[in-house]
Length: 560
Image (cartoon, rainbow, N blue to C red; front, side):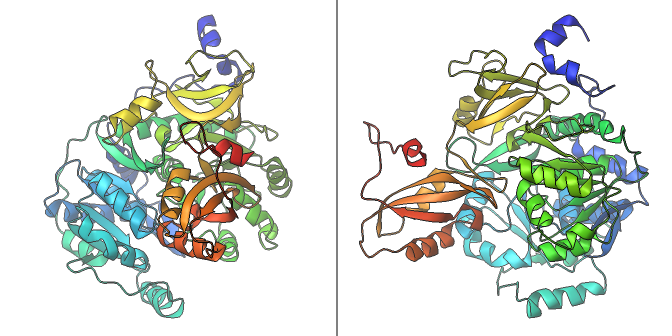
């Protein structure tokens, strides 16, 4: 390391031993090439397990070849967008691999979206096809005619589970009644798509590092959800950065032959997508998919079946597990690495986790726009740092003031990020992209923090009004927009409020037009247009809202 490098990147002197300062040139041009390489190298290893059913890397290759060939037979062109709307079930990694290998772009969709949210994302992305779990088909039915989606493939929970699948489907549909009646004329079942692709070959597609791999939807800096355009090179770079950071985890405990990852975070979320699916597959790891991590007793029962080594999660999830008696009885000896992301990890939760499992939570930081990981704590740390860690290899962090000038060590400014993992921009939104990118190539995160002399960054606040609920971005504009559609509401303003379960929750201030309007009325109205985590938890009625001279609502005053 040269003196100038140390001056420019003070964090390099704090890196774990033998960790390179930069990633090597990428060995694959596309994510498709990376996973196809894994299919060859790890053919007989288990790749993904869900509800007791395991598929190997060879199975994943065969299934994704068939789904990819079926997609190609529809006449889609290279780069066309295919939406995936599923929880963590076996069809999700199969479909993702199929879409990428066939030369298309994945649009990840939260399955819990309301019709309004789904319609926006399908229209904005220009998706031509969608693969969806039947549990959510009714949502699609309500909006599909307003979108450009021409091809619909509907999966069932039991599709890839053999004979057991019939029982799983019966329980999901008839016993738990989790599938509302739906009708999507002309749809193809997942099994029929697999059958249609059998015997067809997947036509080779020339995919370059600069082709778009994912449209990862996020609120960005304003209310409307927009797609972070992630190129193959962005996501491959982040997988490579994480790969270089990982060996420190094995300095104290030996690395097992096959790493077992717990995949409780949804694969449609960028954290699990990069860390579990892509980084995991590049190492030939075995991912245990958890379709519903909110069912803590069911989740713990599943954990009890495996020796697991890598556990990515959120503060809320760690907290819920720590409060479960059965979880406390599990064997944590094999656990090598616990990764915290998506939201701030609270020190009391981190301390209880270490006490129980013997494993320090390594907190990292990133955004959809950074594919996602920008910083991480050392994986060989002895204690929880309370910071977001050090910039990963090939990543630059600069703390800047309002005018874009770099702040001295220890002074608070906006956290700005530069590196090969930073997105290409927001999909079809050049103005929004220009707002968040600096002239010298840094992404302005909207988070306020400071860096210490060792290169560790601490977040202190957010510049923007975003509310972070269990790791998901909630934008006040969107909540307010839905709220004021109610005829009894004159004005509304949404702010963040601290919440011990989800980190933050939505608090809505309302000026009534109709004096008889109740809290229950507003909550019922918001439930129609907003998915659960975006809905107001607390509602406060006011005679008027504080405003600037030009009439802009002062959310800051409401927060204070």
